[in-house]
Length: 88
Image 1 (cartoon, helix red, strand yellow):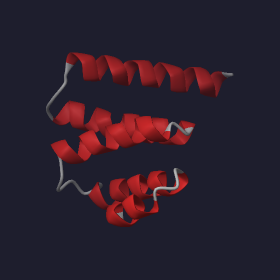
Image 2 (image 1 turned 60 degrees about the horizontal axis):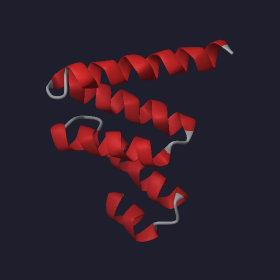
Image 3 (image 1 turned 180 degrees about the vertical axis):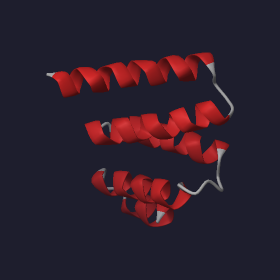
């Protein structure tokens, strides 16, 4: 369907950006967007990986609290309650 095709194209574009630009502001934004895309798809481990990369590159970004909340939710979904508490 069209929505799935658009998400697939967005993921491919973000992967291309990250491959071509592994660091810097553009890469940091791409990490956040990829985390959101994968979270929406239910790819918890993939989302967490990109969220953690975002936080490592930009720990004081305005989105930090929202990203930590998402990471906590991912840990909860995986039954990792102690890790969820640390993220929150």
